[in-house]
Image (cartoon, rainbow, N blue to C red; front, top):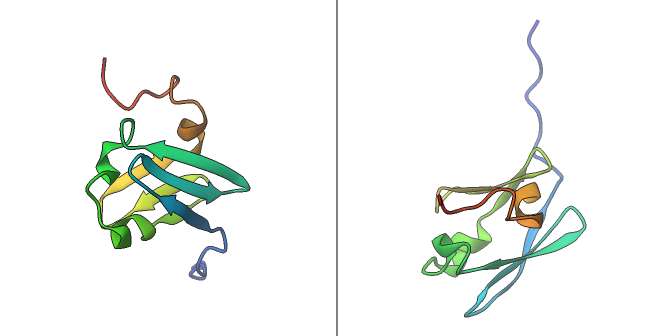
Amino acid sequence: MKSKTLGRSTSRVEVLNIDVHGLWLYAQGKEYFLSYDEFPWFKNATVADILNVDLQHGFHLYWPTLDVDLDLHSLEDTSETPLVYQ
């Protein structure tokens, strides 16, 4: 027996703002700020690339054109999951 193909996820992520310091996201009822200092992958990205983000499995952010994956849990406390090896 084969499972049916699942439909498109109804969970959404929204880019609220992009400025010289970083970008703001809204996902799962919370707002997140991603500074370019902590998330340098977005600094030179085009607006279209930043807006092209998917929320997968309710907690996984994925930018396919930038090949960036982030977990919402890691955005809440970056000290637990540092983005730079020390």
